[in-house]
Length: 138
Image 1: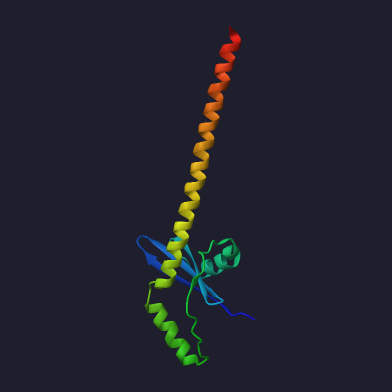
Image 2: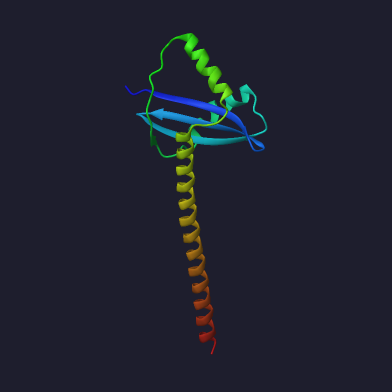
């Protein structure tokens, strides 16, 4: 059975509070970035995770090395304290977010191009129809 681990980091960026979900499964990291706006309370974050986790759009998976963590409670406590002090997100996470952003950008471009061409085609057909109606009128 594969091990899946997830982590949510909430930090202040520019003028908004941002949450970064990191999910590691099969040695691959996928990330999703959420903008909360005002500072979220603990229960609001918990409620968000419970209700909207499956609606999140994660980035494509990026290969990463998985570290096996020990079960020593003092070590875990030190790591948590270190993570709380370190407010940024990892470079692998940033790469995954950038990959997702580029993917969404290309999707938007293709959709807008299709819409533009469909509108052009509609205008052309409308013009042809008007032409035929004028021709019939004679």
